[in-house]
Image 1: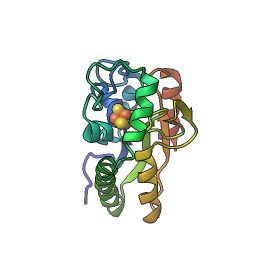
Image 2: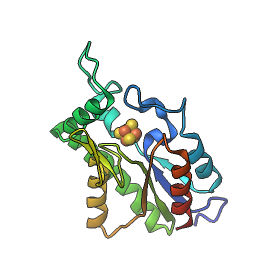
Image 3: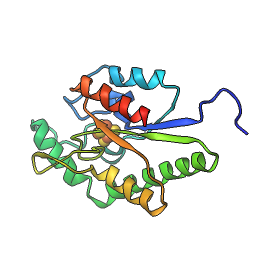
Length: 182
Ligand code: SF4
């Protein structure tokens, strides 16, 4: 089964790696995809699974910012980190996690390789090595990635993860290449 042209390899990416339009206001650094990291992914032969953007689904594109407010990006990230711990946001994240786990189990069942996951470091939600709380970047996964790790652990499903930042293309290229090398 599945002995056609497919590579039988898949990689998960945070939504905004392929679509910067979903970013928090003032935080998009490319018109569309994060170019350098995406080019490597496109040439890797892996199928790219674009995970939904949890913040967009939970808080909307404007992250429910107060009308007329002019917050700093840092204070917005802190506000978002708090809002993403709310019941509605947590339930939306859990729904996304369940959907992703279902897909991964299907791929695993049929012998596909799950090459890894590329997240966004410094994001309160999709950070891998670092997240954002209390106006600071911390070494810990974001809320959504933490939830995903917990569910993966329950199912004995482990996948390699790396975080990148749009503002650091050199480091992003290295991280994605390392992930693809295994
Ligand atoms: S890091 Fe995650 S929550 Fe933030 S814009 Fe990207 S996909 Fe959405």
